[in-house]
Length: 166
View 1 (cartoon, rainbow, N blue to C red):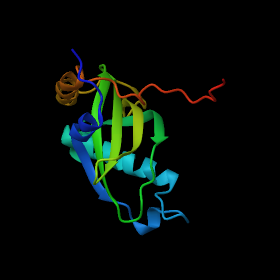
View 2: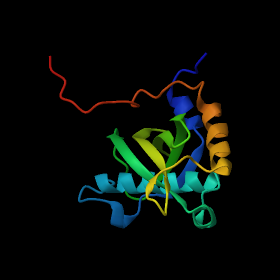
View 3: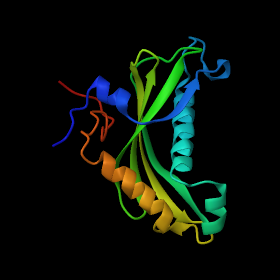
View 4: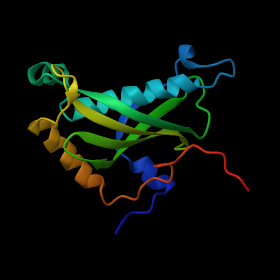
C-alpha cells in the first residue's frame, strides 16, 4: 500500500539541504531567479551524494563519478529574498547504474515552491563510460531506495512539457 502524496508527506521527505535565498540569486522582482532554482537543487544533490558516502575520497579511490542525464524543474511558487528553503528528497527508482530522484523545495511555512526530477548515472572516470555503482555506494542507494518504494509518486514526477489543448 502506498502513502498518499499530501502537503504533510512532502514536508516529511528527508531534508538534504537548508539554504536561504541570497541577494545574488534574485531577479529584478526580488524572486529567486529561475537558474538559481537549478543551483539549489544541484547543491541538494551534492548533499545527498555526501550522505551516501560519495565524497572526494570515494571519487578518487574508485575513479568514479556521476553525471546528471536529465533534470525537469517545476516552478510552483516564488521564493523570495532571504526566505529559508528546505529541499527534500525521494528516490523514485534505481538500478545498478542510475538513480531516479525527486526533490521538493519548500519554504518555512511548508509551501511547495518547486520540484526537480533528475536522472543520475554512474560513470567510470578513466573510460568516461557508464558503469555500475561500486558496492558500498550501491548498498546505500538500495537501502534508501527501498525505504522510498512504498511512497506515492509525487504528482509532478514524470510530467511532460506540452501545451494543453481544449
